[in-house]
Image 1 (cartoon, rainbow, N blue to C red):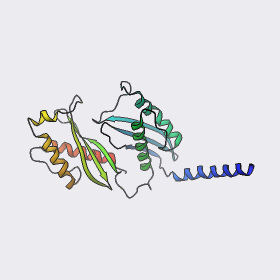
Image 2: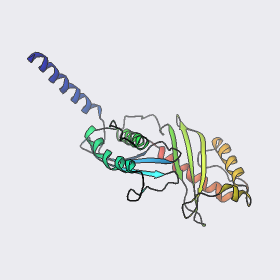
Image 3: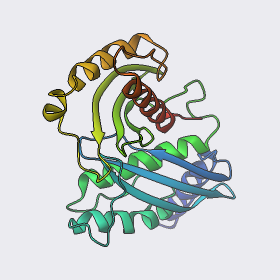
Image 4: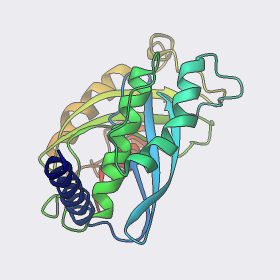
Length: 233
């Protein structure tokens, strides 16, 4: 029995040592985003000191790229996930933690964002890649009328393979009524044109679409923001 215990202790020491060696994190602060869902996207900032994960900050944003305010947000489980998972990530020294009951999507998004941030902290991880695979949310600056544009960009093997969605967010954070806007100017057609032709151009630098100069510029900015959010280094 004593021999068996000794073997188990030695195995545990080896496992812990191997885990420590496996982490090749460089001290610093690293930020990353989860894949963008239809209604939200998650963000993580991790702090590495002496090669260890010492702190994590989590945030969740709506599909309009507005940070959720937990003081007024109605989904209690989502607030619990944002406030309790950081310590669990530190204790686990990685992204593998238990999902918060009732907040599966939030938990999984935070885990993905933390994993990506830790990949950024490791200079040898995905060293041959520029972007993470996935769908990333980006936004433009606010225009003279107060609205801004948001886009969903999907990347695979360092290439932009689709622009899945474009939406315009008004100054009051409501969504632009496309049908109403189309009665004055063909916004839907301009969006469709951009989503198709942008794939054959340098991402985020499509030449101006005739009759949609301002919109094209804002969509380009939003695409470049999405690419920044997908960037590994």
